[in-house]
Image (cartoon, rainbow, N blue to C red; front, side, top):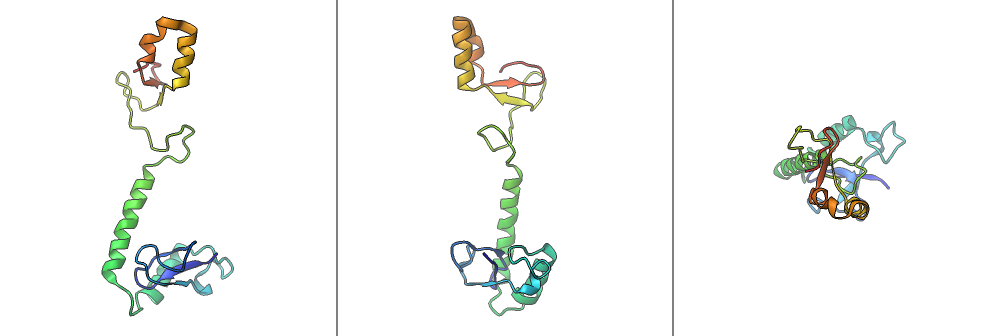
Length: 146
């Protein structure tokens, strides 16, 4: 697997399935050894080398399109912004950071009350669990359900 670059939009990435840029659909070229990390790792191109590659190979190319390049940079920033809002270390099924806040102590240290937990509570306490089972979240700070 080789890192490739696009002369038209300046994208530098692994193109797994084809030799066509996934952004602008033009043909990509392999990154020359000069830009690899220490000239030995063809799977990794350091940031400084990417900048040098853009200046030396991409921006000097007659195929280079400045507007397309700027559009790609804007889309890359949007993607990074979205990814920065995702918590990949989450142990629950949800990967999105919680925006739920406890109405009593205003903590965001809350967890969703699972259906299994509600069923177990009903099995143990019967009709007395109706009040708790109508709640969706539990605050880990003040221990309240809401």
